[in-house]
Image (cartoon, rainbow, N blue to C red; front, side, top):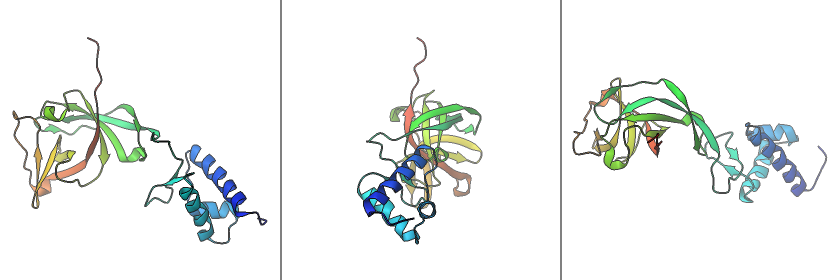
Length: 203
């Protein structure tokens, strides 16, 4: 490509990246290099980093396609799957029947999130009631004190995680229920609860 002032080139880079993001395909640095004919990947990276510094783009760390448009404080809306039910009481067999999709405002990929409908009252005092929907971020570990969705064997439950040395305990938020202390090889964390939704039915 012919020589143009850096500001004009950067403006062209921004417009192309903006359209790519709006079409659902955030580009990689190498794709920017190829489209604009830059001699090195570093030149493309410098333009993108300058656009981030100017506030015209944002960047999610650790993602090759992590460039996004600033949202003005409101994350974009993504659709995440609502998968069956999870017990908030006695343990219940894990069910992953797709009930539909939930609109969620999040910077994260829909693949990182899912929803579960709660059954039971063991998390009542944490404000999670029977019939609520919890939005869960998929992750294999969590910090002590966080509310998680966990598998104990093949049974799923939502509880508050308590770490006692190398032992993980699952605690209810209702004095009528007892904590669950699974064997380490029986416990799998599916994710951390990041949102609770309540739908009010007809009176």
